Image (tube, rainbow, N blue to C red; front, side, top):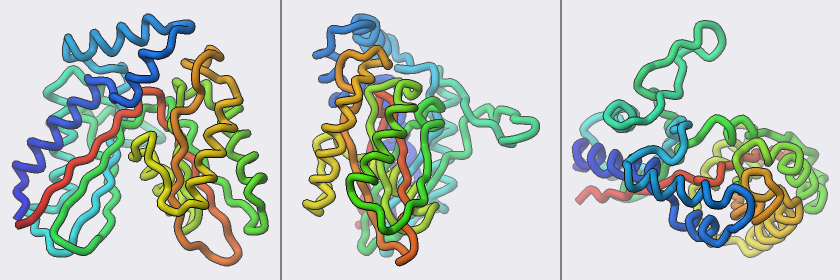
Length: 273
């Protein structure tokens, strides 16, 4: 059995870390940037780590992607454990509570940053892998779904995505990480676009055709000159990642999700022995 206390301890520690310590891939870009606002960005991550403070006041909503092996035994439903992780981290640290229980009318804060968003993927074997994003409101507001004609060509699809980032990218605290989900159904495409954001910047799609698409789109997006914090200097996009799935012959769903310059994410893996 994979015990609850093991998941709670390891995942809680990692979730605190990504809120307080700069993503090493992002740090390399910030350290190499000397344009407008550069000193503030550098001081921000140094003070956050030294003082155990959040890198951003928007400590976001936590989104988990759970790859659950069919041989794994758990003490309780994984939803319950992950909500306890989120509550523990956000109530025991100086992190803002960002969730409201009713999205339309009263919008009362839940006071513990729960419930978390949990996506479960059933896999074979005895491992439990949990990937997560800490998703701020600014970049989350730029998420979008395109239901396109299946006859669209690659360049037309690129133009759709480039147009969206060009119009909205400066609102999401760039440089951005761009996640794209292609195929499945409308909801599947959006989940895939979020899952794509859990990848390392240097990671490429295992399918060489999609890997080329990622690299070409990254190059094109960086010609937009959005720059750090929308100030037109430095890179505009750190990386582009695509996840794809089979789809209906009459549809082409394309989900686009953007992550802010902090790219707060992590992964923990457990094994049921």
